[in-house]
Structure formats: structure tokens, C-alpha cells
Length: 259
Image (cartoon, rainbow, N blue to C red):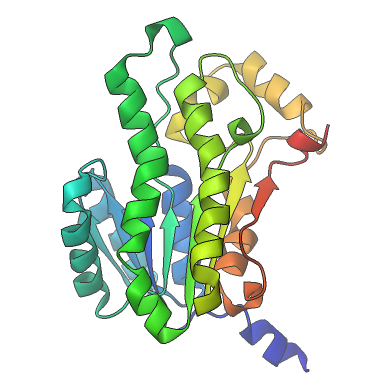
């Protein structure tokens, strides 16, 4: 096999992907990586102004992109949302990146039922019910990619992180269960567990020099993540190159969980 046919395994030309939580942070970065690899991407989030800006940036670079503004906590509306995504993409969806997330950061004693439900719904329930809307077409086409976002808190308990940690622990098992249910039809379901990356959800970490430096010191590499560090893993799990990998969670954390 020559070099060019090997690299073709990572190409996403002609593929259509939906990325949730794509108005900022990890979701927006991953949508950009997929578009640069040739995919048509549909960005989904609540904030239409940020989605508009993100899509304009991708289109200006010559990439195929569109957006659908929606509240992913509205479970009753997920079927209609999936239809809007297919319409925006111009056909069946080949893969879903579930990057939308909520981290309330409250002491256990202050977590309300409403906060618990919203966190578990967005971080755990929505990835299942939304992804399932696209499974029939993926199954019929014999190809599908699902990439969930786990966390360091999938494995370790952090202060003020009880509902978030519970939801992200569930994401790892959800990913395995998705793989068991759908992989026989050519649908690979995997997850990444990012370390500390500069996003809105980690503003409290990166806004304080001491906290940021302590997080970096806990990694094997001695530094925190940069969004560019997610480029290769995003394309790999979205592409044919990952065709015999499913049900796995890969830590992209600079060795934080290795220490």
C-alpha cells in the first residue's frame, strides 16, 4: 500500500457530520477539523450569533458548513432537529460528534434537582437520543461514526463536580453500549476524554495562574492542552481509518491520567 492510499483512509470528502456544542470551545474546533478534512459539517448549539460567525469563517476558507440553532435539552424536539440537520447537510448524516456539555460546578449540598437533571440530560441523555435519530440511515449505508466527549471526571472525582462527573462516567458506558448495539452495522462509537483545554467550561482553571499551572504540572507532558491537539484524534475517529475500533474511550490529556 503506497503513501497516498494510506492517507486516503483519513479523508472525509463527501461525508456529512453533525457537531453539537459547536458554537465554541472543543465542539467548534472539532467541527473545523472535520471541515478541513473534506466533510460537510452542520454545527448545532443554542447561540445563533456564534454559530453564524463559526460557519462564516469555515465558508470563507472554502469549506462546506451550515448550522441549526436549537436547545439540545428539548428532548421532544430532537427528531425535528435531526430532520433540520439532514436538510442543512443535503442528505444522510454519516457521523455525530456529541460535544455539547454542562458543568455547573457546585458543592454537592447545593446541587438542585433541576441542576442535576439538566446536567445528566445534556451530557448523557441527549447524546443517546439525538444520535439514535441518525442510526437508521447509517445502518442502511453501512457506515457511521459516533464520537462522544468524556472527561478526566469520567475516571476521577473533582471538587464541586458531582453531577458532571456522574454524567461523564456514564458517557464511557454509553459509548460501549452504543458500540454493542450498532457496530455490527458499520457504526463505530468511541469517545475521547480531554484533559484541561482552554474553553468556556474551563475558564475558572485558565483564569487563575496557579490553578492553570497546577493542572499542567499534573500531566506527564508538563503542559495543558491546546485545541489543535484534538485535530488528529478527531479526524481519525471520524474516518475509515478507525474502522475496527469501537466502544473505546481515549484520554487526550497529556498523560494526566497516567500519573
